[in-house]
Length: 292
Ligand SMILES: *[C@@H]1O[C@H](CO)[C@@H](O)[C@H](O)[C@H]1NC(C)=O
Ligand SMILES: *[C@@H]1O[C@H](CO)[C@@H](O)[C@H](O)[C@H]1NC(C)=O
Image 1: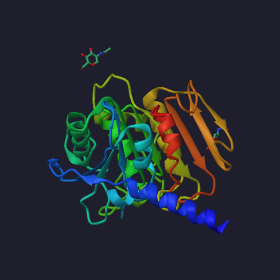
Image 2: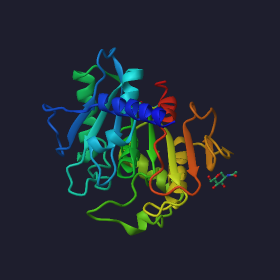
Image 3: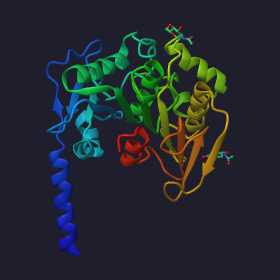
């Protein structure tokens, strides 16, 4: 037993050591000077899907790379991972300014879009296969990105966030009412907020998968229902079905509208008793994105 765990330990170390990320030195950083880090598999077959992986507050690009398996999965499944790195002292992203909420309006959201353009232009990324995943501040950014740039992303996965357009829940400018899940709006009001990020947009919208823990004491659980209200309104989905203990004990899966867990426009996962944040389910993300 002990030998086995030692061997497994070495394998895990080897896997994480091979999944290095590199700073893109010639990325301009405009308009908000975020750092751009990437993992590009050796022998990448191009054009390759692009996954943007956005870290949480008090986090970093390299920290998120260490906490998640996206880079090693990229080696197995041939995609590029972009890790934006916050420039704020608290390690949060700007998920509340009018600029970040506006298509081509500036803010951290536009800087991340410029990273996607760089990956498509210079690293062999496929502009038709761009995805985003994030945790906490990164989850909020995921909602902001798919709301403001629905033309760029095909799908997103949100781990423990708040609705797009809600107040700033990360320092500086912490919003208690948002974090505490007290900003309750109608589905129509949330939907109008999302539509205001890119007025007149009438194309296809990115598909979304949203995770939240019922015991989240940082971004409280009502934020889960508010996100689902928001996106079901944007997508015009009025029916849903629940499956308990899916994909694991204590998780309730809610599929909106037609389709399955990997094809539906909107899928939620409520994790009973789980706090901040819901553990990453990388293989579910890749399946939802259609990468695997
Ligand atoms: C969608 O928007 C584009 C660009 O604004 C416009 O050219 C097109 O006519 C619109 N399509 C519909 C169906 O409204
Ligand atoms: C589905 O599950 C959610 C919690 O995950 C719950 O709020 C909702 O009432 C459930 N819907 C049905 C029809 O049981």
